[in-house]
Structure formats: structure tokens, C-alpha cells
Length: 267
Image 1 (cartoon, rainbow, N blue to C red):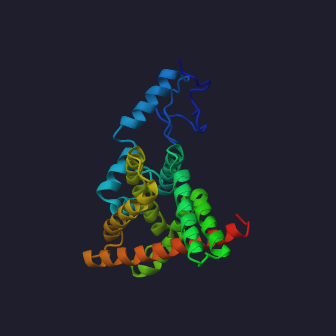
Image 2 (cartoon, helix red, strand yellow):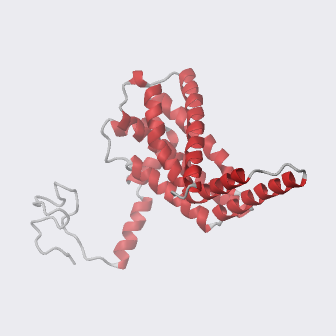
Image 3 (cartoon, one colour):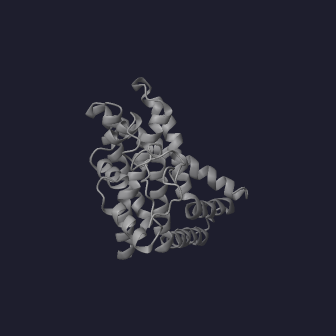
């Protein structure tokens, strides 16, 4: 049955109804009462409808990430998932997967064990590792276990600023470059999800998948930047290498800063 007291007004935004759909928000005029079958049908349609935002966004980002970002900044906002929302959602899934599989704790244990083993070996040879270095190593492990995903997200606006400077002649503003990178980082992380799952099931330490993720990131970025910034193949490769180097240096600086803040009890 319908669940709308006044069929002349939209139950979602209150706008005046002049047809089967609201002209303001697009919601269907005859809203029905919620039911289990209705919820299940809606979820199934969202997953299987090839015209929905998420499947289209994932498919087109896989085929041509630069064109998706270009379409989005040129005004195709309804066709795709918001790049920031897409990126944050994928990173949240990865973080949950790493916790569920125990990979974060396992990585921390193995890295800590390796650091302790090196400290004992150095002590036995009369070259003890200074306490300050050991404390810094512990802080770095703690930063990895607690702040790796937030640091990667924090890196995106910083990388967008550097990338805009690198391609300032292309007249892309900061917001446009930021959206491009949000799509790139989010999609690289999405493609990395099955890798993390397979490594966990195979007994491998998913910490090493950072190399796989970096590879996905470099490929998607290089291919996407060629279209988004209208670069030649040579300049796309150069841009990818320079941006990759800047990304690595910036990430190291962020981890180092976070470790220092951890040592001082600020975070």
C-alpha cells in the first residue's frame, strides 16, 4: 500500500508533484510502506542494475580512469559515484578486511619480532641499538597499525597540490585534480581488495601487498593522467615516475611525522 498522506507532495523533499516522479529530487510519487521483500528487492536491483552509479563507476574506472574523472569534472555528476565518497568507502572496506583477517595485528607482531631480533643480535655483538631508535621503531609499528589508512587518505589532498603544480600549464584547478586522484586512489585500493583476501587465505603477510597496491596505483595513475591532463605517452610516463617519487617521499615524511607525534604522546 502507499505510505504517503498527501499524494500532491513529495514525501522526500516536500516538493509539488506534477507526475509519477518528483521534479525536484526524482523520487517516485507513490512511496510504499517498507517491507522485507521491498528492501531485498532494492538491494538486489542496486547490485544488478548496470545503469546504477556504482557498477558504471567501477567498470569505467577500470577501462579508462582518466575519462571518468574528465567526465565528472565537466559536469557528469549523477552518472558516477562521488570520488571522495568512493575513495573513503573502499578504504573503509580494506581496513575492515585487514582487521577481520588479522593482518594488521600479524604484521605488527612480525615487524616487532624482527626489530627485537636485530636488537638482540646487535647487543650480542657489542653494538647495542640505541633506546631512541628502538622507541622510534615501536612508534612506527603503532602508526602502521592505527593510522595507515588515514595517512593514505591525508596524502591525497597533499598529492593533489603537488600534481597541480606539476601540470600547472593544463589549467586544471585544485578541486579537479583532487577528484582525479580520489578516483585513482580509490580504484587502485578496490583492485587490491582481492589481492589482500587471497594473500590472507594463502597465509602470506598482506603487509607486502603494499607493493601490489603501489603497482596498481602507478598504472592507473599513468593511464588516467594521459587522458585527464591530455599528455603524450612519454609525458604520461614521466609524470607517473615523478609523481610516484613524490608520493613515496611524502608518505615517508607523513609516517615519520606521525611516529614523532606518537613518541611525544600527541597521537
